[in-house]
Length: 483
Length: 122
Image 1: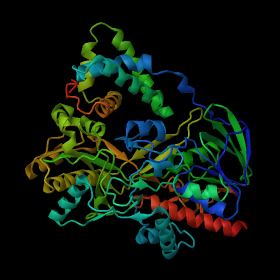
Image 2: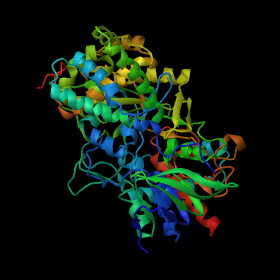
Image 3: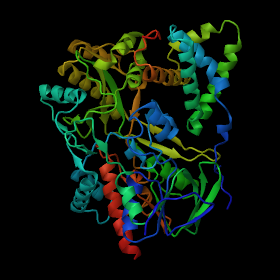
Image 4: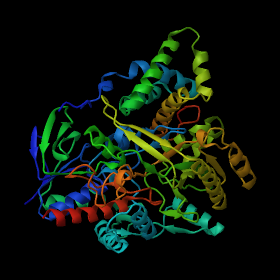
């Protein structure tokens, strides 16, 4: 049996409908199809071959991000976030950095959220499989100059740091910037197709059709504006931490849905060095974990447009630096937030309302994080540091750090995140869990969530590997129980 | 069963250009006085397209503010208003100004990386 991309049709049938094709959806589809199940994947965005769009460019944002990358969780301050909206979801657009699911996090989730049969060893074994499939490894040769800055600064300060492996495939003799990302369109989706799974792109699920807690199918809207229906016996919702709870709410599923969104908020700065350090199409692979898990430092995409954006908050002072963008790279301080957000579907509107509230502790961490990051840059040899907040001074030495800290307030900063999770938390805490220990949504008999929404809180590291490991675990349990 | 959630967004039918374009043009002209007019037009076109694609709630909020701004810009001597909102860190309204600037600057410096801080072509 051979699957693959299928044409849209007014009426479609499948045994299992998988909604979304990112880290959770693609993995789920591959496992279920390989178990011999009839799987249909629907994806709201288009199929775009990996490597045909310039990474981190406005063109990529137009084609592969939801709303062109302009999405915000409202709050004081509001937090900008991004979501993939294409075949492969966020795996097509993210940094490709890989973190194994941390054992202590898995144990904490198991104990605090009463997740049944959650075995760190099993998750570890699944992570091994994922690492082989995604070709996880270190970059060949030397990292980029922007990455070396993080390593050098941390080494000088004797802060814990490391090179983070990536899921990339490098050509023979290739270097740090020649890797081809092993995203879902290169790995799990082709696997699913080989096992017979079908996939319809440009297909948005408007709502699930439920009766007495049993999903009978879904109503959809295709890219050309036409509508259709899909009949199925089981549904896996894998649209990510924003779209998944919004779809469940639109489908009138109640319970702990969309009330506990968790993110890793970040603040940024730009740093100018004596030599050219800017690598427009790639991100640094080194990260500094001295204060992890509450606080981590890393590097961002830094092409010229993003440098201008990073300088924008204090443009009257920083504007001249934009002409030297080749000597500038952008870095971030990310925190593990204690705040929580809401995702609410709004009747009559296509997109949900997203809000997020930082706690006092979050604000303090962001402030100290930005100061420590600026120090790291100075120790790495930065000539000038430009923190991204309104009223920020140029930081040229340690004495300027105190001035910077005095001037900082989170409400003046550009806060953003790329890690969104926990909007349908799994576990056996009754009303405090949105889904059971294997992703089945409470109050339903055949609706499962299998994406970042399930993670009980933000894990403190890039969550993609954790999302995939849980997706494999839950899909396997579903196969066992439904045979 | 009838669902309350529209399958397609009602606000998508309201185009942003007439409301957002005039303010974006005045703001970019003020911020980047030497930016060639053709580049400014391109940047405004990009900004308007992005605003057309905003998530529903944001789109509604932006269009409401943009409509108020549009009315004010019709009045004589509205340059003072543009200068004021461009500099003052106003709540909510300031976010609209920041959005226009962010989109415009990101487009300008990604498309023409060696643009001078005044907007002049290198």
